Image (cartoon, rainbow, N blue to C red; front, side):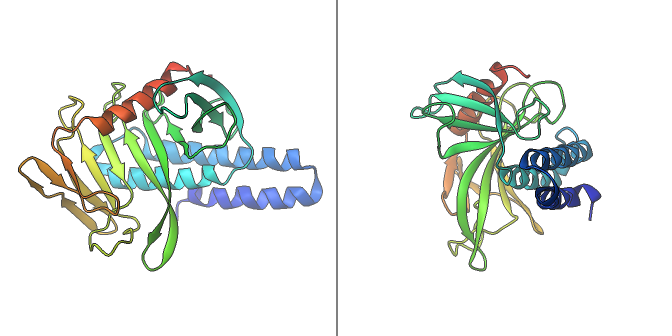
Length: 251
């Protein structure tokens, strides 16, 4: 096991130990520091997006999201108005580990309010612009009778400010209505024109292209079964989110 994968457990342990010896603020700061080290080591290891390593890359980002989600203490560093999600016109960017950079985001009716529109954000090539947006899908049933949290991933793979890869977490290759945990459905814009061209399934020993017939891609997922070749809507939505986050500026 990579040592950086063990660090979140150290953060949790610190939180409990510190609670017995000092005040809660000290415990939270210790946990934040441990997570900051963990995040830096994880992102340094995967580096900028590489198509050939995309399966491991996604596994690492997915794990980071689960750790970020476990932290209750969050600082809003930027708030702005947006039109990306109609019923949630306010975007908060949130710093989890105290480094002054956003780790997560929330779209809501007003700053600080509860919402279902939230997720996580990353700058993988460390150029000061976010290039990977994660949208929380919520919880789903996986095999065998297991409840898991799932995330959509929207990636700017060539760092031009536009989303050109969309990854679904609800793959269901055996059509039993349960998520195949660890198998992801990737959709690509290979010529960077803002439209879906093809897709494949990756993860847990699976690596095969999506079937395509008469310009329709067949998606074997719990919540979708097809998408047109040339579809631009989902990539446009992801790009709009990315533009929202990058237009706020980095702190």
